[in-house]
Length: 306
Image 1 (spheres, rainbow, N blue to C red):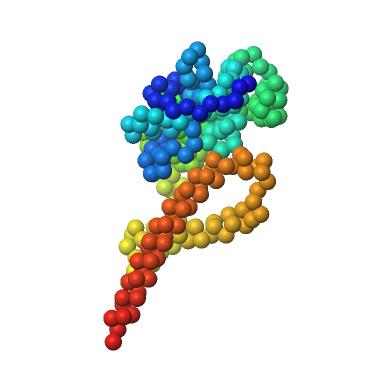
Image 2 (cartoon, rainbow, N blue to C red):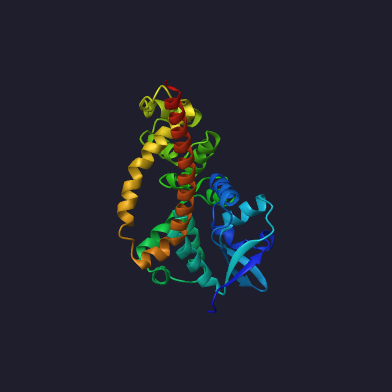
């Protein structure tokens, strides 16, 4: 296999035939577009060469975001891979950064199985046990084909689809339509499926389908949040809650980073570390601006006291 090549390519010229195993999520696409707008392209997308064209292997959200922003060029790392190796590479790249859902993993594994590979052979290629392969392929086989297509078109969140797997396929369609119309997320869908499975009463099931949010509110009443500082505006109260969360998480991160992880782990974590470092620098700049403004205001107030 020849060394990968970095090239600048028009985003629209990149083929996306391999996107059939990815399930676009509008919220994730919006986040990527904002990131590209604020920070530019941090990492190249990855493509394989196919009969003179480049077929995107990794970076579908970056391609979509760059097109939405009107970019004319993307940095692309070009790899020479056969049709089996391309699927293996897609999984390995995304498993390292946890940027692929379990159902997307299952769709990639089904592609490999469709090339005549046994589950044992697939597991060996990915350094995984046959049972890992079998469980994931089983997810796609248990999900109604229409829901698989809805995921591929970005109409159904993979997390919602996964919560429907414990139902017969006919009921999967029924509850998926309800989840979509009520705009339920994965957690609420899981709870509603649990309520559905705990009853055989047709009247209760009709109520669950017709009034999903009311049923959830009655079965899972929300705890009252702790009152915020009454001196703060609502946006600043939200900021205070997030700052408290950051205060809790940051010491744990510092302990895990000192000493640094082994080099082999860092090689896998490097893209995410680079992204977090960029965000941390921007956060530090904005925090510095807020604290310096507050210090200046406090100094001015003290100077005004006779």
